[in-house]
Image (cartoon, rainbow, N blue to C red):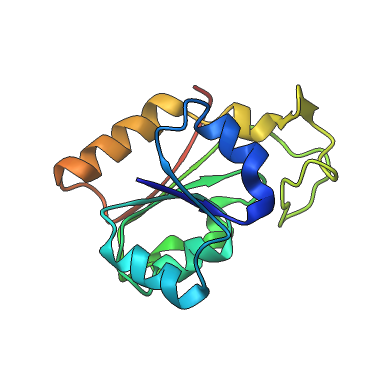
Length: 150
């Protein structure tokens, strides 16, 4: 497993992988190299970023952790028709009432202990079950959006 992002994402990487079990590739890949890595991958777990959209061209299954972006806005059945796409979002009403919230902490009005409330309330059991099913090769819906708290 590879943990990718920009070099400036080191703090986030420490939160996601505090024991440093994953290979860190922060700032290591060009866009072309990242596309090649995605094409070789069994699964991509991501937030709503350009990498999520790049994955649709490689066919890698995507598990998207959406913060303030409503799943309907991502339109998985249209834009992700070439790859399995499973989106998870918390059942949290954004106080900014912004339809395309970036969930950047400096703009978010619902930050608790340094993390946005919408990311803290993602349905973790469902996310882990979905990841496990994809890695085991179990068939399920081609695309799905799930909302709820863990």
